[in-house]
Length: 455
Image (cartoon, rainbow, N blue to C red; front, side, top):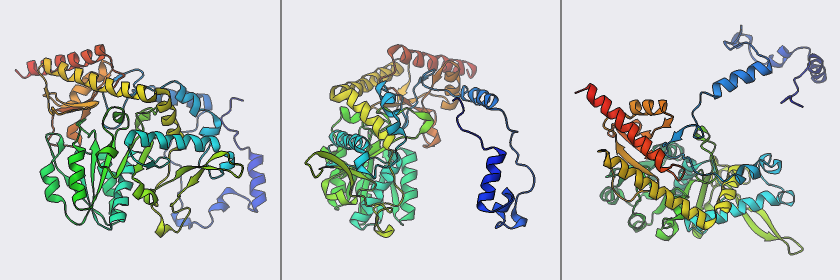
């Protein structure tokens, strides 16, 4: 059958109206006062046939740029990474993509085991004691971490680094407002968290310090030092981390993190024009009972066979709302499964190799830009991304690159007004030497044209 749905016939409608005891559709709206009802026709296009509608939508979709047809150097939180072909094969199975929450373990062992494996692999990457079954995305996971810290310490101030993804910072601020928590931004200096400012801002009301690793500019923060400062006042140390980078970097759990969160998008989840993604949330054992969302545990049945169940569900659906660890959290089971399949397919060696390629190729791009006279703004250790001074408005350069089939870097002036003409260039394992060379040469050519015009 080619129909995506079976439309309702006039006789179907009449039978339904008769069943509920009314004579017309209008009677369904009798409770709405006549004076506030809309009169007239909505300002929308007239209905089309299915074939005509599909043709129009396909035409509109073809206008989108994607990383299959364009070479992408855009990152800033969403990246073009290698996605093992097996990922889509597994998550396309109906028992996975139609499931929501496995409340009935006797019929959900496959999904529960997959989530358990996700939790296990996240713990191995982060160096933390336990992880939950996933969250909406990295931004909301970080916000939940801030709320957890405030509740655990009974304090009302969060310190968050300016080098944390600006969108994630906004989410933290929005969540904190509902809990009357103050969020104070620690300024950046040379692309890193300003340690002097951190020291001066710390006080006995600080619930936690929140940083990103690698940070928004691709720089590697000194987690050990930041963690020591945070713990001086018995505050918690929260790290938002790219899980792929942890294939080669020291895990936050080994550097003093109490909570490690992030977005699993680099593992098997396409960019998808910005979402949906999958957040992860991992903690030390002392915070186990404060974790938002769901956890899957391993147990045995009455015959001694291994099995998996949902456990420690301190959500508002399961306990009194005022006692819940979170009122605005859920999980992304299907995307968590995608991440699990990707991590399994890559294995420890594959994950480390891809992380290494991100470092090497980013280094190559850095040297290529410098060779052509462009300045790399921050020169510390970096992963995946660099900040390049393009000398001219990034928006204009990106428009020219787009004509050449290249998606340029993120315009930092959009969220950091002082960083005019600076682009955040992402170089993943997907980029080849030739693609990097073309990017640099196209930027150089366009800049030369602009400078000739203004000479």
